Image (tube, rainbow, N blue to C red; front, top):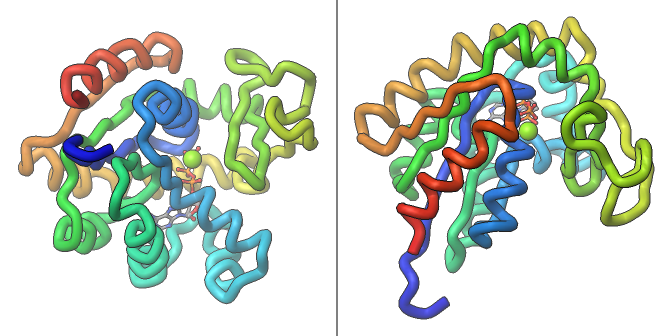
Length: 216
Ligand code: ATP
Ligand code: MG
């Protein structure tokens, strides 16, 4: 990719706002590397690493994993991606995390998805995931080719424990409290791009158009 400027972006949005689905489309259309903090944590849990064991209790109850843990985990991953353009998803989640990232790598664009909370609560119950890869499906609007089966590996899809209604409500509250200061931080830096709507398939063309203008 010699001669090409690296592009560093973040996608933000409440749990179930379509971040993962839009991220997959960005990755496939624009060739960015996708780094999802939630997927990374879930893979640490599957592998039973120290970080995974520490993080599990926070995740299961829908609370945030401590900033120090997250900054260390993501910094290590970003080092491996130094030569690539990338899209972060799920990190930074707090103002502290945003400031820590800004010191090592300022962002070019921050995509913020605004989806009404009631829409999210209604559709998260139809979400199924392939845990090892983080691929997500929604039985209503983004179904797998075969029921409850991952398109790529043919393995079973599962529902996340933290997608249970009580944990979802908690995660939405946590998002509301912590995202505002992060959004303000990026608005002040002049890199914030906001998209509102109730349907991922309708939001996506706007996101794609914006990125087409930014990524050469
Ligand atoms: P969705 O996957 O629907 O977008 P989400 O954004 O809540 O929902 P993930 O990003 O997958 O879910 O994160 C799942 C959980 O992992 C969070 O509820 C939180 O406990 C933990 N987590 C992920 N990223 C961070 C972060 N940057 N800081 C603190 N905790 C985090
Ligand atoms: Mg996610």
